[in-house]
Length: 159
Image (cartoon, rainbow, N blue to C red):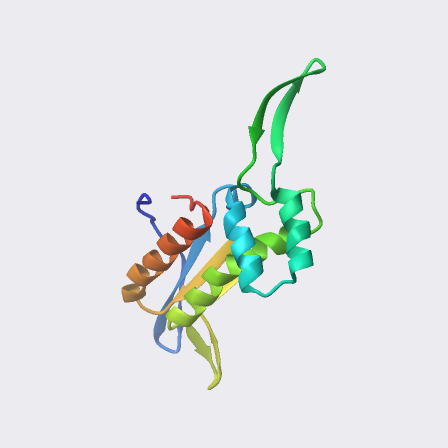
């Protein structure tokens, strides 16, 4: 089980007499922690072609990292998680892995309404996720959703 997550209100503001809490989720080493098996599952779930998945799989399978000291290579270690930060696809790979969390939160929270139609509950830019919580009673639901995401993806949330 994951350690407790503490959500700190970043900003509380009033919108037509409704209190909205603005919460932030901070991922620990976001790009470095995503499980490769989770990435491959996401690619399949989103319906990418077998050929494209084979390219991505080839980039992430049987990779290792070593330390080079004075021309000698030491300690080759297999890499089983992280998206390649030097790869032009790394941002998209990470965002695809984050997308299920964002959709689940968006569909689970009340959020805030703008006019009669528009509603927003979650905003994200790369690994910075901001939640608009209309009621403190929604926080246990957020905790459950984030725990499930952490268990599935290998991600870690800073406390």
